Image 1: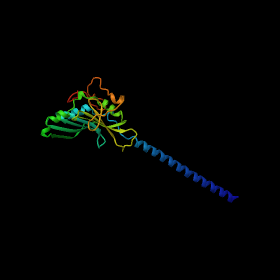
Image 2: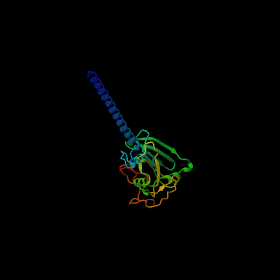
Image 3: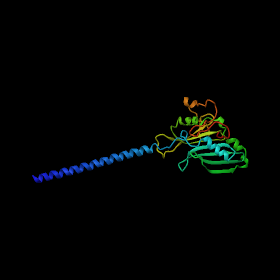
Image 4: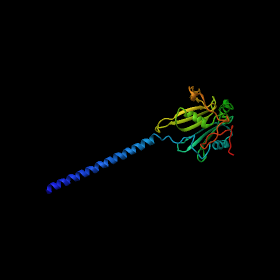
Length: 243
């Protein structure tokens, strides 16, 4: 009897230990599954903030005013994107008849960096300024252009740019598709800054059918960009100054 009792006790202990081991393994597997799911969620939604809607400490208008306070010229290009440091910066290009100027301005604190002034080739004196300067009172607002870009490309806009070209001013948007991992490539969409229509890389307009391809709303006033919290362009010609 004593031997049977001892055997029974031993079996019971073994079963108890086995149960604890299985429970521990199940818990570990559950934790691993949760960590895996969390990792997948992070991977598929890590495209950063949308630079056309985010709020920055320095507006587009203020950044341009700072640049034109350093160099007397017309706006030829401006862009907003994340720098290698992780902060957001405006990159601004200005043109006079004989020189060009470039600068980066921190979108949060307004600090200037990478200033560079250079002389244009003689055959470009005057002509490059006339070709690339942007008349801000004749273009559509940034928000309207961004909406046009998102019609066929849903996602987060990581970078926007407004630049003068030989074919007229163009908006450019780098869009990270929703649900894609951070490593996925952005889609670049170009918008005619006068008409709001999508254009191809070579400057030709895209031709689309249906209501979405045939109608592009202009601002009620018919004027250029209006400033928002995101630091979008303002209405006005040539130089801008804060009041």
